[in-house]
Image (tube, rainbow, N blue to C red):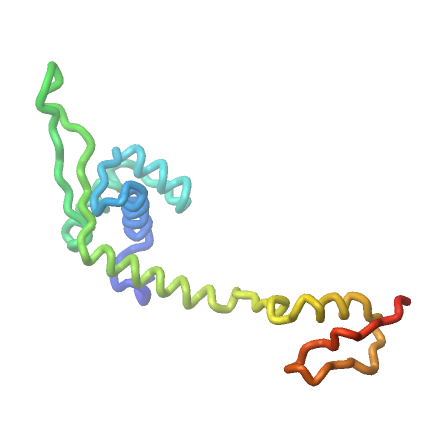
Length: 158
């Protein structure tokens, strides 16, 4: 994936797309999933199975590259005051540029897989005529009215 998005690894792109998907679900530029949730979503949607330590390593690299900002949060009330909760992840503008580049690349790749549809260009009357005609048609009758089939065309049924 070097040519696609520079030096970003495919694993980091998968992590970035998971964070983007979570933030998109709630319509924010930030999200705060647990690391277990990120690992579960990576395995489910990207078939990437990594350990928690590797995830932390990749998140530190992504922060150093300027893709995300992380904010560690602490509880403030109760008996558990001072305990860490889930980290808040902010997606930066550079992350959106990388994801947009990935989107454009996917669109270029998928151009060859698009199937053209011609059926919507035919009128309903032409479709009915073609259904009634047999395979050996020598003459196709058309009216001079802008290429439409003649309304008084009566076809014999075979």
